[in-house]
Amino acid sequence: MSEYADPSNGEVVESPMELVPLNLGDMDENQIAALIPTPLQAAAALQKARSVNSRVPGKLDGYRKELQTAERELKLAVALEVKSLREDHSKATLSELRELATADDRVQRALDARDTAWLLFEYAKDWAKAIAADIELLRSINANFRMEHR
Image (cartoon, rainbow, N blue to C red):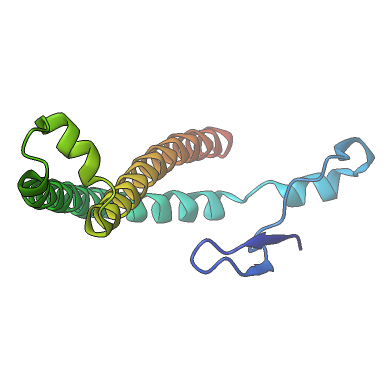
């Protein structure tokens, strides 16, 4: 088995599935047949993918809400820092004060939290697209199996 990095903790573990070998020309018919999933395995994979896909909208909504919360926290942190900077820099424009506000630790933490939330949300959207593509592929495989076994 090949190794891969577990995304939850970064630990390198044995892969739960084998990769398709590149030397298909050197394999006999039985070895190639062993690489192809059975109709039952393909149906189970489709069922699993649909199960995962049913949870995607809730997860995406959670990431979207976390991003909105992080953006609100950032706006609040910038506003509070601009207010405190206004006392020291009365002649500065609002744009200049906003630029100066980014140097504050609280604003930096809010920026980091917003960036992290945004990355997680984008990753979740990409993951949802990948699951949808997997479902389409598995539906096609299952349709081909049904036609072959008629």
